[in-house]
Amino acid sequence: MERTDAALLAAYLLMAVLGICTRCLLVNDGAVYLAAAWLGNAWDLFFDQNTARAVSTLFQFGTAWALRPLAGGSSAAFMIAAHALYFAGPLVLWLILRAVEPERAYSRLYLAIVLMTIYFTSEMIAGMGLWLIWLAVVANPLRPVRTRAAVTILAGPLLAFTHPGIALLSLLFAATGAMLTVLGRPFPRSVAIAAALMGIVLLAAYFATSAAFHPSNPTIALQQGLNKYDYIDPLRLLRTLVLFPMLAAVWLLLLLPGVNRRISGLALVLVAVPGLWFAAAGTGLLTWLYARHTAPHVLAVALALALASPAAWLADARRPLLVCAAIAAVAAISYNADLVLFGRFVDRNTRPGVTDVDAAAGFWPPPLGGAYGERGTFKWAAGADYQRDVVVPIYDWYQVTLAFYSYFRSDRQGVLFHPLADRPGAWIPFTCGPVERAARAPHDERDRLFLAFLSDRYCVR
Image (cartoon, rainbow, N blue to C red):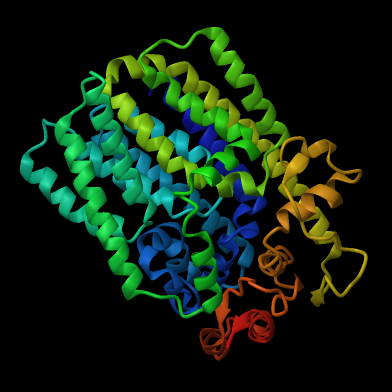
């Protein structure tokens, strides 16, 4: 393993260890997935609401659901294991990539991209890994045609049930390859054609699965409708890079080696210093959420540039990838420091039973409103009381996940929650039928009370 691979892997392992310790998935959508896996039939409770992305869902949380009985009554043991399995998934794909790739560009770019997306439960992580494995096999002319055809037949259905953004990834990769050819840079024509065809197939599969599978929960359907253009709206994509300059620095570091010109030390410093600063002073929950929208586009262009000149790219990308690893490590430390503070705040305010934090006036900070502003770029200086004024509003941004975070954080003794029923457009995570079915055979008395809370407050009838 070369130094570049070791640095990227070390940064990822640091992120994984810190994320497991802080139970990082419980502040985002992962809280609902893990709660469903803990409480009963996860498919019935929640997973089936995203049937069109079932491969990604099961990749991220299926193993934890399957191994749930081994945890017994210990939710703490289950959460540690579930987080560890979540972080192990991309490593498995990375190891497969290293075994099948014709050049190290595939696995290095995948791990670098995952460093910027792993703290949010994005279906793109599984999709990008599976797509890269498929492309690495198809792009290797030394592999028999029969092998490449078999892998394509297997990969197509799997990719169709990851995320529709993989279709855009494949098409953009093919388009970039075609453009490079026009500009006189050699690009494997067969690879571009294969990617274009796969993109067309996946696009057709998206329309088919969208027509065939609909969430029964209307609040999920509403959220999907509001967010369906996030991956293709150019102004929104550019805005995320303005709001989170760390992402702009990392994406630039991944793209620059492909311009076929060695990056000077001064240019590297001019990108690295702001990247490291914003990693330390501007990393929050929304950083990882918005990174998933631009990540597949950067991967498509960066990989196409790398495959146009593989040897030159591998040499020119060494230092930029080392800087990417350093930025990711700093961002992970900054992010998890916030999560430690958020956890302490929740611990201090959680009491036995159920507490409506909006009704208990005074002790809970108001939700984050308006522009992200200085909280996203100079967060330490954005409030007189950093923990209360900055950390809590940022990590309470979803509001819906507080109930699950506090429940599992308190060893299932208490629940802090925001009422959702009166909030227009609120995401209410469950439908009541599956919750009531799970309540007929709860694991213990604490889960029975929590399921009663979900039935009363957090499900749609």
